[in-house]
Image (tube, rainbow, N blue to C red; front, top):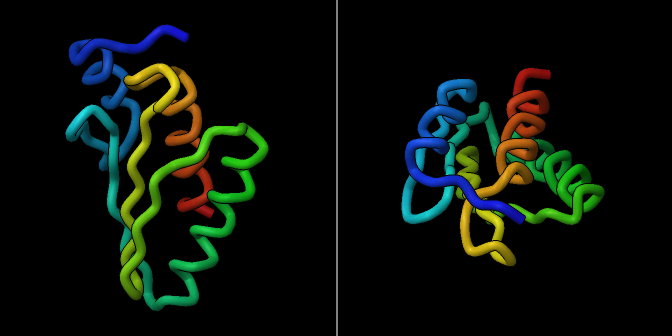
Length: 94
C-alpha cells in the first residue's frame, strides 16, 4: 500500500474541513452538546471502520472526541485514511 508524502497529504487535506497533519497521522477534534452525542458518533465511526477493517485512534473526554488516522501496516498515511476521514465527516454532518 502506497503512503503519501507531506505535500500530497497537505493537498488532500484541503478537501477535508478541520483535519490536520500531526506526528505522522491526520487528526481532527469534534465537540458535541453532551457525552451521549459524542458516544453515538464514536459508535457510528466504529461500525464503519470495522467494515473497512481500518481502525482509527479515538480519544473521548465527555463531549469531545479526537480522531487520529494513519495506516499502521503501511507506516504512513494512505488512501484508507482519507476514505475514513471522508466518512467521518459525512457521519458528523448527519
